[in-house]
Amino acid sequence: MNKIAIVGAGRVGETTAQMLAEKALAREIVLFDVQEGLPEGIALDILQTSPFFRFDCRIRGSNDPQILVDSELVIVTAGLPRKPGMSRADVLESNVRIIDEVTDRIMAFAPDAMVLLVSNPVDTLTYRVAQRTGWGQGRIFGQAGVLDAARMASFIALETGFSARDITTIVLGGHGDTMVPLTRLCTINGIPIAHFIPQDRIESIIERTRKGGAEILALRKRSSAYDAPGAAVAAMVDAIAYNRRRVIPCVALLEGEYGETDIAMGVPCILGEKGVESIIELALNPDERADFERSATAVRAERERLSEIH
Ligand code: NAD
Image 1 (cartoon, rainbow, N blue to C red):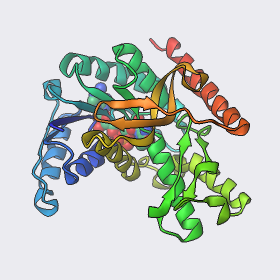
Image 2 (image 1 turned 60 degrees about the vertical axis):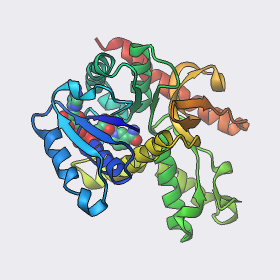
Image 3 (image 1 turned 180 degrees about the vertical axis):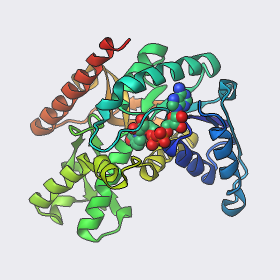
């Protein structure tokens, strides 16, 4: 890609920028943040890793939104992270205001860009950006399932002692306690995980995956997770930059898929150079369908709170 912008030069934004640079996923990577000096400082710091990682993309940071001009993709990580004991929904009110401001800047300075939402609560904020921009399903999407699936794969690797490289997992639904790990489709090099792991241990892996973010937050105390989130975003950007057409879960705007409309939540998508190319509709069994609907109900309840925020 020619130019990628990251809005929000906090922990997730900085980690993402470093990973995109190391993988040379764009000729130019820019950081925008409202904190004076912060994006410039981070850009310089990352630039100075270039001799080690041998990348030659340009990295700049600024408090001036003009820096967004000509971005093909804007990654939004601006907003408050939750504190220990808080759910993602607890930061909705403060983050909606931030995201509205960020959205208006993207519309003004990068009106042709795709937008990848990371800020939480990511399902509701992806929906909010889609509503505010009026841009379609393909251009507005969010990161949740790539991270949740990676967490689950890591826990399966810990449980079995097998290489994480061979583990394929898929997690749909909202990015919260109601997320839907599809264990039926999780495999270790094609072999269903149930072959290796007893059902009660699979249940505890699911539970740990659902609480994966909270576990890290409780341990770190002063920050929520950012290493794996940055890597998850970089994996999505890699799919876009190389038009890989990867089949990965994204937070996408549903227009009748899975029987849902007027909502954004995690579903398997084909991700390529134009963003979400299409949504894959899986034939869910009755239990999975019930879990998906429960998750949609939770995401919808959060979305309804948007009308109370002015
Ligand atoms: P952070 O506090 O380190 O960084 C947030 C940054 O946003 C700060 O630098 C702040 O100055 C900036 N900001 C605030 N208002 C802004 C505005 N109007 N314009 C531009 N920048 C603005 O937080 P973090 O740990 O990097 O987390 C960022 C967000 O990502 C949080 O909402 C967090 O919950 C979310 N997150 C999502 C996932 C996911 O899987 N989707 C994973 C981890 C974190």
